[in-house]
Length: 62
Image (cartoon, rainbow, N blue to C red; front, side):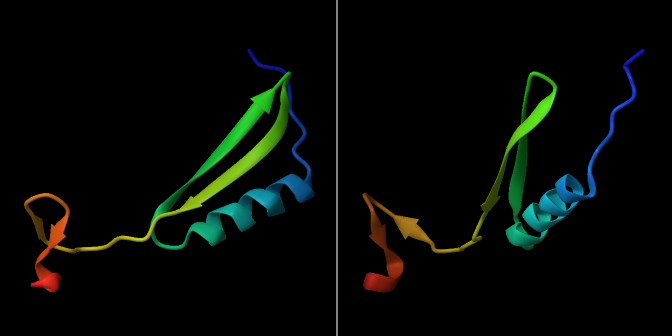
């Protein structure tokens, strides 16, 4: 059984902001060291759809 953990409102707000910053696509990573949150990393992903063929040649350039 794990001991009780106290999570501060400030930490909850930081995690909420990280989730909001990624928008529709992305990820949030929470790093923990010695039972403490040491880093929150958010990554926003921009989805794109560009058909390509051959070596690095876009159809739009033709």
